[in-house]
Image (cartoon, rainbow, N blue to C red; front, side):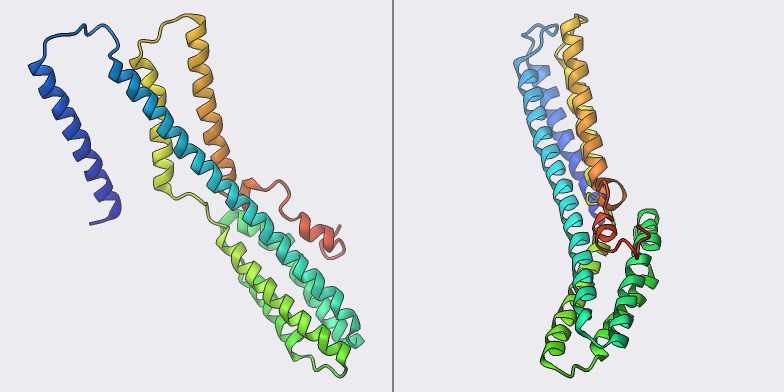
Length: 254
């Protein structure tokens, strides 16, 4: 049985049990004024609000953490490339220029081609992987002839591995953070939380209407906040390529 079907059947069964118990109790009890708001309704409204606030808070915390991780991944990738570029300074001119050219080509492709492709399709390009492979091969093929070159070689090999790891993490951050079932729960909870206002027999006074409007606006704003940061590379980061453009102004056309 699919998980979503199991979830739906479980919700229907739980609701059926609760409704059945309430109906049976109503048939046995004739006391009480139906025009008044029962205390249990006020208690349920409070509990629904608290539970939904916790769920919404966890969702905001989750997407915000994913945004920060995505920002750190981009910074780590750019910084590792910059270290490879700078450490190539001690190599012979031909090897130095070849490795620096590989770095510039990878950075230019990432900023100009791969980033728009990521935002549109949520995936990396095959060309970016090929450019990184070429950079790795040129670094590992270098044969150091001195202690200084050996130190630079080891550091560059380590930094290329760091670029590869950061690129893999960036690929994992291209997809939305929250799955679809969580969004269903967030929107359903918003409808229930706002709908519970009407069970309290809200009147048309300016004060009550203002509070109801502010409560609804707050939930809408928080849902927008979750949506904004749910896809960090498409919407969550204000200038995600700043790490690349600041470290490689020539390669990015800056």
